[in-house]
Image: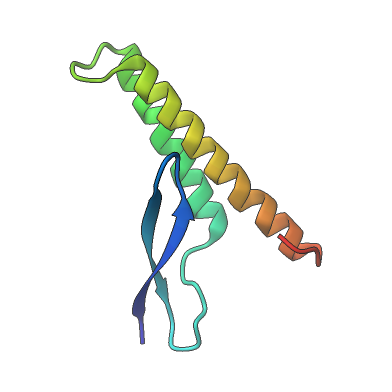
Length: 89
């Protein structure tokens, strides 16, 4: 059985709630590597759109958001490495 839960992740000046899908044992159903890859892919896509001259996108804002997505992906990766090596995140 799947259940939707939410977790809060510190954001730039606020918190963002992300829905998580867990099974009836509480096991997360999305691999962290997939989440960090998605975050980096979204940022890269935004940068590509800015470089292509997409209307309505502010270059500085997109750059700042892309950096924050990459930082979040890095934190996920570091926590996973720490967890897999027996260290605390």
